Length: 338
Ligand code: PEP
Ligand code: MN
Image (cartoon, rainbow, N blue to C red):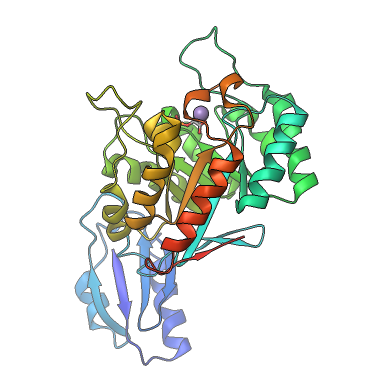
């Protein structure tokens, strides 16, 4: 439920209203827009007396939110959410590149890729330490050691880092990670989502392999209902009957999400396609569709990558994408964050 507050009001009236709502066991999220102030009511609003609220001088309107997702709903928070991480802004008119290898393989590999993608225009370094592999016999990532190397790359290059958390048991290891990635396979691991939400750390929530937009937003709601406001949604392709690509990039999810939610939406064209030469066209299409950023797998030696080599592009190819995206950004009213 949302309560729209009249433009002209006294602070005391406002404070009393918030106090009154809280006295009914509800949380209040205040969203101060350029033209209106909206109070988002979180909790069981079934007993709220709407007529009573409407009768108050300060209240302009009261609306129930029909959708099952509340806190992440655009109606709850009409302005775009800007996630600020290590001085960089994600969302709104800001455009970010997150780039790096699928998996951290060695100190030399992660540091040299970090330096190259930074030079080319990436604002965040990605790299997997704990890898969700289909086969238990495939490389599982360097795990704790990989995380240490990623932190070293962060220290050397100054780039904030994004890496996937697969288990609550590893949370302690993630305290210096800037953005916690929840991968496609864990999008509906609700216990994990709740624990991650409690940390209040920025979360990059990937879309599940076969999940609807509404299910995805409900997962974001799990994280946000624990108090974490900094969530970035990442479209990474969904499973369809097509076999030329690893997944099918759902481009329409971008403008749909931008209507439904205030959260930033980025695209991972690497997992969406599974094919290195498709990464550029899908990147440009995503920018055109309004994405707030791209997460791209970059490897200095894709042929010998321990994971996802077929979809990994070289630092040069990454630099070429950044250049082309930069030409498009003014058309979609965004600025590159460096
Ligand atoms: C990844 O980013 O390396 C990854 C495993 O992605 P996804 O969860 O989208 O498959
Ligand atoms: Mn990968």
